[in-house]
Image 1 (cartoon, helix red, strand yellow):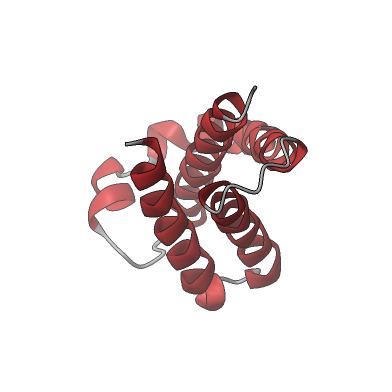
Image 2 (spheres, rainbow, N blue to C red):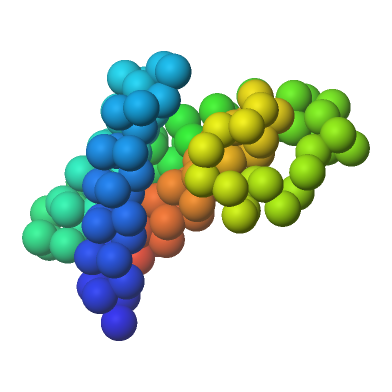
Length: 119
């Protein structure tokens, strides 16, 4: 079950990296999503470098924490339906929420990989 979930997350993270091509700052986001996909690939192939998902997860958590003030500041003004129902970027506030959510998903899965790879 864990291996299957890992391959699903690998595909999600790989797709996330590809979709960043249209982002205003694509390189950093492609690197983040690509690194998460790479960690899943290594884990899926049985190549365990515990420091890899740990480092990626920490970077994702810190990055998400940096976005928290912007998300909190604009939370009252957000049209929450647009966060989930509209594909295009209609405002920077919505982009921050989506970015933070993606980073938290990456951090969570990297944590699971890290804990699963303990001997």
